[in-house]
Length: 197
Image (tube, rainbow, N blue to C red; front, side, top):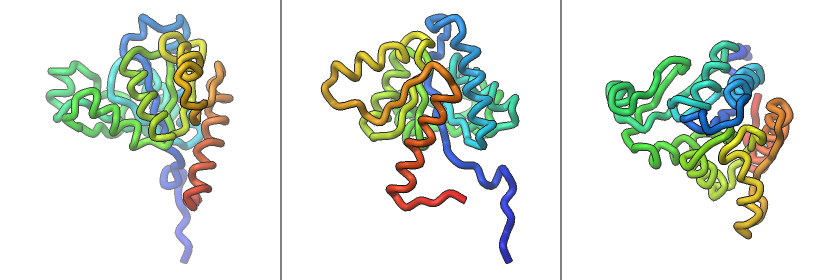
């Protein structure tokens, strides 16, 4: 007897949105683009993964939840109490938050490695750290250009590092960026013999 899967049982890919916790350093429309990115991830039946933090990842989580999506957070804190009191991070707009206790750098490693791909939106040093982890792991990376900060420096930075182009796709448009990113993820799945139903 075949079991029919509901929409939520057939979720496809886990997309990490990486970006500045302080969006004051971003372009004027970066918050709106982050929310739209979250909404589009949800519309495509993908799971949004964030660092369970404020700023760009928070706005992406808000957009995904408003569209009925699923959001998983990976916290630097060891507990919910430490997450909210010591780190002063939010818990809303997430379906599940995993408390790692690994502080920011350890959290970043788990965040990237638990995702099928990452998207860089604006960003500062922590975003660059997440980007370099994804680059070294040869993960698909989407860069939403025109959002300020790290996102607008990556193309030039990668060109200067003499390590090749990586698995990076660029766009100023959320939908176009996700189209390109899904193509890269599907190449990985096909190469590894993973089938999605």
